[in-house]
Image (tube, rainbow, N blue to C red):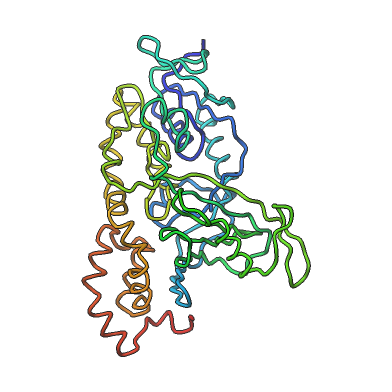
Length: 392
């Protein structure tokens, strides 16, 4: 039987980062993932916040984000940015996976189907033994099912989208809200190097969202779906690839879920397996990478439960804030109010500072209500932020 200090289950950004960190801290590591190389169901946008944690080399970067826009009906708020990046997830994930191997982790392209406790050790697939386990195999993978409770469907977002083989015109990251079958959720449009990644994120129990996405694609790029994986453009008759993808994402509705233990004396969960995803928009890449490293740090110190304080020190505030305001932000009246006044200098500056990570997100809603009277006055006088003069 092969014996290691720690077995990491899941080789995505969280697991690969954990494996590399654990090796660099002097542990022998086995990293299990049967899916590499793969194309992950994800938009692949690296957020402005925490991008310094991401370890994304030039070869994994498809292009840089020039701006981030938010749209409701005919109102569009476009914010220039200079830190965000797009990655092709298969390239980036494979890079992180290989980096763990280069550091000294032993890779096993094998599905973990069995985890058992044998005296003071864990035994995986009856053939591999370790003192510790780091679970990073997604929402409700075997790690989550073994060490914690399954995440309820009520606390999940579903993401569905297409890799659409149309050459992008610019590098603007778009988020479209409103007029969806469910009150909460959004459509995204991410331009990549040679295609669009377009999708929809929504509460898992909401019906009709895929049709909503198809209607959006048809309106944006007039045409029709052919054989499920092609899009025929009306203007030219050309058939382009339209490859579907989908996944489940944690999206907690109660902050008490973040207080539930995700570690024990000889195990720890990180990334999606820990539920560490922003409940508002489903972004979790930065928390996955940092969380993996913090989990490995706790294990290397001989006490995985230290992870509970480590992750809270770094991003508990973001998670608590997001779950507290999630339902308020998606209410139609709030969206309409925010977008109507979002063009004013006061509120547009606030939104820009949050998007660019220049202001604490935990204060964003408070500041919105605090600045609202000023925004009303500016709106009465027809004042708009100078960067929006040429926008619709």
